[in-house]
Amino acid sequence: MKQLTLVFLTKEDKVLLAMKKRGFGAGRWNGLGGKVSDGETVEGAMAREAQEEAMVVPAEYEKVADIVFDEMGPQSRELHKVDVFLCRSWEGEPAETEEMAPKWFRIDELPLDKMWDDDQYWLPRVLNGEKLKCRFVLNDRDKVIEKKLTALA
Image (cartoon, rainbow, N blue to C red):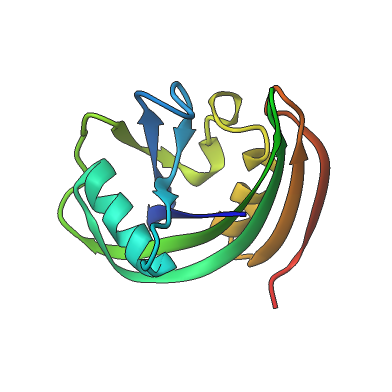
């Protein structure tokens, strides 16, 4: 199972999303994040990815979701575990990089039609204060075909 991390910067009634410009997820709005490298902590990976993708370093953050994705790819099935964080303070100003183009959105106006299919089920809930444990089964077109969401203990 691949370990990944994801962080969403928030301020007042807004959340920072970033348009992925290349590679996996290109053309979709998402938080900042990626793979946890060998020997790296989840929090360390989250901070590194935020710096690489939007030139910010998270300072005050909390874990808000544990998500497992069971993805049926074209050749094989993959499991990904994602630790999701909300960040309320950071160092630096979000800036565009080669990989991501950040933009602030109102929490009640998320561009869900240009995000991953699963985001509609959990992201608005965590942005409104819930902490969740989720499992999503995705078909080979990244569409949710099964889902389970419960409160994060």
